[in-house]
Image (cartoon, rainbow, N blue to C red; front, side, top):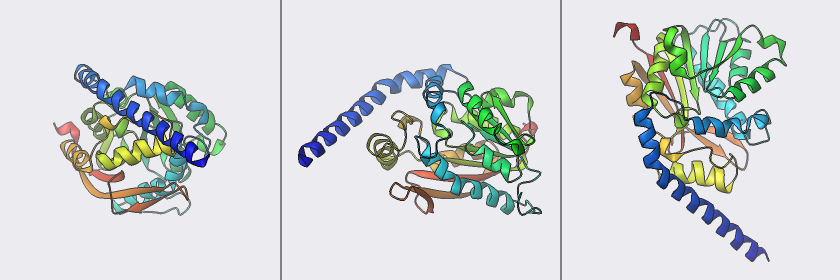
Amino acid sequence: MKALRSHSLLNQTAKSCLGFSQKYSNTALMRNQHETRSNSTVDFQDVLNHSKHSDNWWDPNGEMGALHKMNSLRVKFVKDGLINNGLKETNFSHPLEGIKLLDVGCGGGILSEPLARIGANVTGLDASKELISIAQEHASLDKDLSSNLTYVHSSIEDFSEDKEEVFDAIVASEILEHVIDKDLFLRSCSKVLKPHGSIFITTLNKNMISWLGGIVGAEYILRLLPVGTHDWNKFITPEETKQLLEKNHCKTKLVHGMLYNPVTHEWSWTSSTAINYAIHAVKVESVKKE
């Protein structure tokens, strides 16, 4: 019986993966055509897919559990990066005090809240109205967040129109692999970032290993994420990300690989960027000078 069940599970997984491959092969041309027509970073179908899971966003043991666990790396990555870029840590309990930070693609606020709790003045930005509502509702449970955490429903390109060079730091975590026009996205991020300000990115590499690990393994086999969370066609290599950052006045300072252990449910740093990676870059000049 165990053999039959295992055989059945393998068949189901194979069918799911085959369906995944066929889906993205058939829609790749349509998506590329959309990209050339649209002057937007937002994939509205992607936003809809994420909005469907808004009720589970703050369940650390639910569908977003891996994202919650990622904070063990992300918060320290941002804090250490800012200190290495010249921030003087004068308040041990609130090391980011005085930092004006924009969390782009904040979702339900999983990363925005802990950054605000260590002193940053955080603006969380997302294209999903439902997720912004969830973020606002959850933040309202902690009165200590009311003075330095704000959420805005908008795309980065719309938000950036009248906010040139106002933020000390930008966080774009687990969002770059979801946007349509990555150049416009990073250009808009750079526009709102002050000269010498930092941008922190975490995203997924684009190769066969990331397809197997980030989609087939994470979504179809281990069920760490809802099926359909990611589209491999929108993944981006570290080299491509660095080139786009350089094009938009941001010089890469470091690149880390990130590894998730599905047994211990913990994230760790690694030298391999084969699946997940993090980039810290610093803006080197004023966009206004163009």
